[in-house]
Structures are given as C-alpha cells and as structure tokens.
Image (tube, rainbow, N blue to C red; front, side):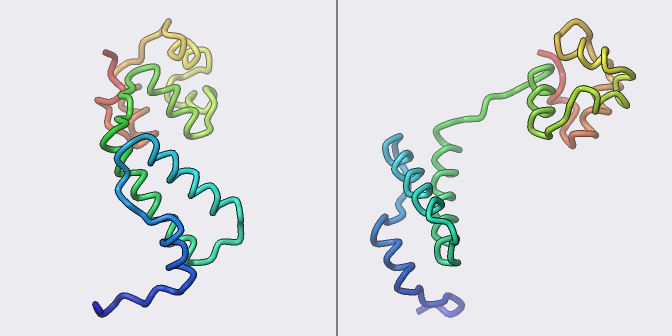
Length: 136
C-alpha cells in the first residue's frame, strides 16, 4: 500500500460499491451522477466519507462539463448584468463608477456606452480583465 493514504472505511467502500465513480462519457451518466450526489446531500448530516466521495463525484462532473458543455462567452452589457447578479449587487452599487444610477441603468439597457475609464474601473471592481468587458 502507498504510504500517506489512509485505509478507506467500510462505509466509504459501500459508497464506492453502490455507485462506482467512473469518468462520465454521456448525458445519461452525468444525470445519474448528479442524482447520486443529490441523494447523498438529501440525507443531511454528512460524514467526512460522504464529503470525500462527493468531492470525487463533483470532480467527475466538472471534468465532463469542461469538455462537453463550454461556458458561453459574455461581453459588454450581458457580462455586466451577469456580474451584478452573481455578486448580488444592484445598479446603485455602481454609482461610484458611473456617477449616477440613471447612467448605470442606461448602460444596462444599451442606451449609454461605457467610457474606457469606466470599463477599467468596472474590471477592477469585479476583478476581471478589462478586455472581457469590451463591446463586440
């Protein structure tokens, strides 16, 4: 046995035997893996073995999605809307960059274009590259 690895508990072996973790190759396997994760999460009060097993299954899902479900590329207004939503922010939270809430709202509706300075400020605020906010 390799040193540094602990011997799995009988419970962990049961988890693996019930639903052996394997690379996901199609949508049906993805759904089955997601369902298995949900069934474990639904029971609540997770043991360390549950968390370890969920991490393995989550990694398999992540790998599949990286190869089969590319993330859409958002730019400009759509990116700004997504960043606001993801950060649980409101247009008023960007007043310090755009000078007024009405300007922010105009940007979000597409009736006002951001200046280069505002794009740089937004990129710094959201910790992204300024080039991802450029209009296309």
